[in-house]
Each structure stands twice: as structure tokens, then as C-alpha cells.
Length: 485
Image (cartoon, rainbow, N blue to C red; front, side):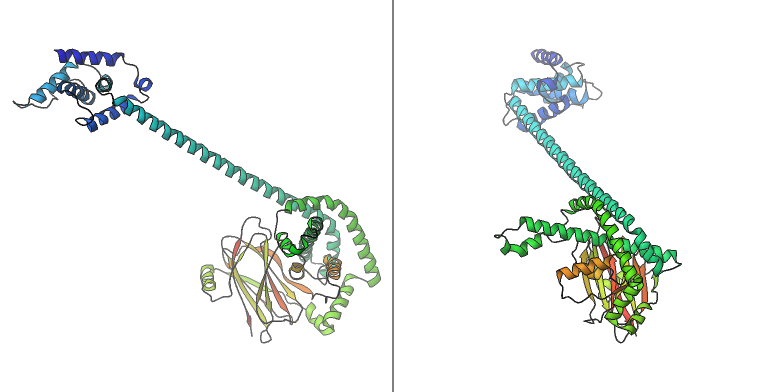
């Protein structure tokens, strides 16, 4: 009966006990699992309980697992099973208390009988709280890192959009200034052919924009060098030039802003240039006569006749793009080139004395590329095919190859000649360049672009692969060139 009184008292204390979450810092179910694991692991080792106390704990455990005692569910006992009979008696003494009350009774009784139980629970709680704090801190750090990365990406995109918008505004303003002048020139070159006139106007405006930006970039670089260079730094001039190379785009936005501000001044300069062109036309007759005189001085009368008689190129496509890429990658073709964003690749293909026609094939991965063909009227210095890479901010060395000469570009004539005269007064005039195929964006990621052109004479073909319009993406180019006897 003493045992029954003790069990009933434990049950009563369980009824009046405070909630486990407030008293122990754990939900009741988790607290009970910790208590039972502690009892099972340390019973007979760190915990030494009397036979009666063990019967009480086992009774609470049975009540929590199976509910109130029921003879139909209780296991059958043997005649000599004294321990089993004592356990059933203590289970019966718990009466109709709930499973939750039995769990609380187990915890409280274990706490009363074992002084090491409460420190164990405190240690587990502190370890859990520390783990939670670390996880929360880690989550906060990850969230802050994601936010910083998103903000950086957003700022980068906004800066790119702003720069692209400024570029377009500047190009539109330049196009408005030069449209009438280029229109008159195109009408003289292609009378009665509005489509060819539009193509030529677009080409001239695009070349004029690139030359304008190059000239502005060179002026800014010269100003920075004059401001920053002192006598002690002259010995490191080469390194300084490398750091301020045209490939460095850190000041591109500032240059665009200065260009927009300077555009107002360019309106007056453009009017003056237009007046000078009118005076030149009155003195020499018209633009074609001036160009004819220049070409005759460089090539002679017979070569000029061949120069102006250029047959149109033939361009077609074929669907076997994967096979073509495999052949080129395997070394059967000329090769594979990665064209960086903002870059232009020029493949220089000299005419062959045994050939009469050039053929080209090219394709890309996933994205389009700008493509066009020029012809440089100069005797090839080598029979090898060479590749030249330039970007949109490259200096005047790129202008000689990548842009129209004075015989084709009315806008660039005086500019290129004056710039060449200042940089190298004794340099020979640059050979003229003719447009065979204007640069257009080609969707060459779905099929192979193929073309051919009959030799107009002795010179060098300039195959232009233009990625200057792409701000973010680089392009992988597969190409192959050859000639026909």
C-alpha cells in the first residue's frame, strides 16, 4: 500500500506540475524521450535505484506507452513470474491518468531520484540553443550575402542599361547630324536604288559613330596621361600605357557622358565641315571625281577599272551545322575562335595567284554574330590567313582595317587623313577598301552560312565577325575559308 500511495502522490504531483516547456525548456514528448533515454542508458551505472523505484518508473513508462491497465491487453504471466506480477500491480495503481500525465510523472520521479538528470537536461538545452543560434546566424549571413549579390547584379544591370541608353542616344544624335550628308552621297553612289542607299547610309553612320568614339577615347587617354605623368613616372611609361589601354572600359560611362555634352559643340563643327565639303565640291566638281583621282594615283587607271567592277557575292545556308562544327573542331577546318563581348574579329585572306574565287563557311553556338566582307586593294605581303581581334574602344590602328577608307567613306576621309598626318607625316597612304557584303547580324546558330565571291583583282579579303553590339555575351565561332582554282 505504501507503494500505491507513493505512486498516487507522484501522479498528483504530475497533475499540478507546470508545463514542461516552461519548467524544462522542451516540449513534453521530447522531454520524455530524453528522460527515458537517460534512464535506459545509465540504469545500473550512474543511476542506482531501489527495486520499488524501478517498478514506479516502469509503471509510468507502461502507462505512457499503452494507456491505463487492461487485463485483455496485459501479457500473460507465468506462475513464478514475481517481477511481472509486481509491475502489473504498480501499473494498476496509476488508475486512469492520461499518457501525458504519465510522461510528466516519469520525468518528475526521475528528477527526484537522480540528481544528475537536471544538469543533463540543462546541458542538452544549452547545446540545442547554441546550435539554433549558429543556424540562425548562418541563415542571416546567407541572406545578407544573397542580398548583396542581388544588389550588385542589379546595379551592374542598371549600369549596363544606362550605358547602352547613352550609347543609343549619342548614336541617334550623330545619325541626325550626318543623315543629309550621307543621303546625298548614297544617292550619287546608287541612283534610283533606295534599298542600297539605305544600306550604305546605315553603314556610313555606324562607321562614323565608331570613329567618333575612338577619337574621343584617345583624347581622354591623352588628357589623363598629361595630368598624371610626372618626371619620376616617365621611366614607367610602358606600364602606364598598358594600364590605360583602350581595352580598359572603366571610364566608358564617363566618356559617353562627355560625348553627349560635347555633341552640342559638334553641331557647329558639323556645319563647318559641311561648308568645307561644299567648297571642295565646287573646286573639284563632285565627290566621285575626287575619289577617282585618289584611286588613280594609288592603283593606276587599269587597276581602278577593275576595282569599280565588283561582282556581288553569293550567300546561302545549309542545315548540317553539327557535322560542320565537328569537322572544324577536329582540325579539318581553319579553327575555332572565341569572340569576346564588344570585340570584332577580322580574318585577312589574301587572294591566291592560282585561284579565282574565295569560299567561306561559318557557324556559332547558341547566338547570332555580325558578318560582312570587305576587300582591301593592296598587294598581299603574305599568303597566310591571319586573324586580328579588336574591340569597340581600340585605338587608331584598328581604324585602318576595320573601317572604310577615304574612297568609300565620305565622313572618314578628312578625319583619317588628318589623324594619319599628325601621327606619322611620312607614312604612305592607306589602301582603299570596298564593301563586298555589309555587316549584318546572321542567325548562324541554326545553320551554316556559306558564301563565295569571284576575285575582283589582287588584294586581301577582310572577313568581319562583329560582336561589338553584345555587352555581356561572348560568341564561339567555327569558320573555314578556301579558294577555287
